[in-house]
Length: 174
Image (cartoon, rainbow, N blue to C red; front, side, top):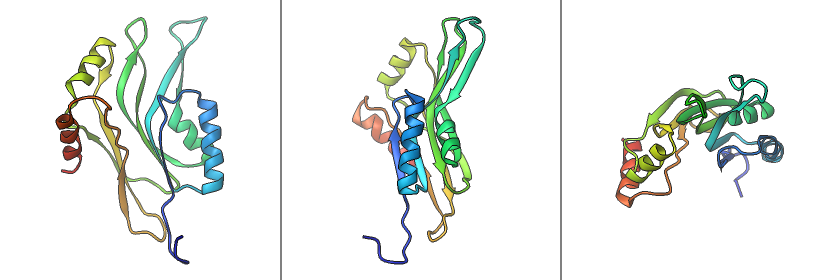
């Protein structure tokens, strides 16, 4: 239990698995937020995707998973794209990345580029025609009752050599 009069940080970290089923994700975040009164939500595999119109293949409706969640629960929002997908014509039609959502204003937001990517990740990206590089969003916060602090949404690949993954972690700490 938190001692009376002390403030805690309420944070939800969620790997959204590319933000599938947006309506359910928004409803779930809204329910959690109503109960927990979250300060921050950290999203990995956040997604901006385009839905091609059946009538007009050049017309897309784009949706941002994290931005949609931020809007429905009234939070500030930062998205950092990492990897871009292409449609059948070779045009970019969406991307995924990482996000930070906050009840308070984001202070000094930046994107931190990963110092390297495991060779196996680069191979898979190339095989699937995906472009981009791994970035991590970072921002600082001033939440009443807590000292100013910073947070990053870090999503390391689940593949690659241990030394490659450790190198990425070390790069974040510089």
